[in-house]
Image (cartoon, rainbow, N blue to C red; front, side, top):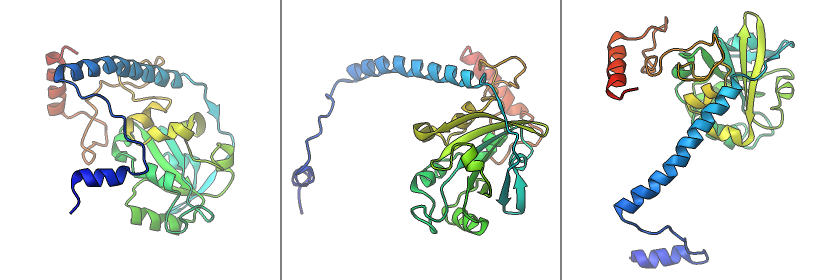
Length: 259
């Protein structure tokens, strides 16, 4: 049996040796971490400021009527909201001609789909996430079952992908509606798509944001106290009410941490 040294030598053959960082004491390690933490905090604040600018982006009216095939038949873009105020549509490549067809969707799109957080948390913020492809519904349902994906997934039947910049590459489009009027509020694609998947990243790209009181949002935007709306994904109340017991825990924590 090869020794660890022999194995490492064999694995490194033909490759440059890794130039690893220095090994330091606990005190030195903590000092180095604190230096990086300053930059990480600055990045967090910068990200919050960018999201605040997104909430002030002008809206683009969607005048054209779009039609999709869904599990229950034909649906409109407004139907994709599922009764919620906001909608995020991800254009996933699953169709003839895409690598992996018909067993799989695009590897990159599938990589992203595997990272999507439980949709109940997004729905609790009055926001719906939907996927859209050109594959027929039977193929989409088969793929979802195989990959254990739960997001609503529709079939594009018209020029939706071309009109919203996702006919040749993937991307997330955010929409909001006021009655029957639909508006496009933001668009993220390319490297920006790498971060998508968590509830926070989805909400940060929307017009209404996380809808928490600490956010810098325009006057009149819906906002509630942070933490209090959080819940287990199978216990969000239909009326959006806050559990009294959890409310007490949050209030006590705020006092303890002087928040």
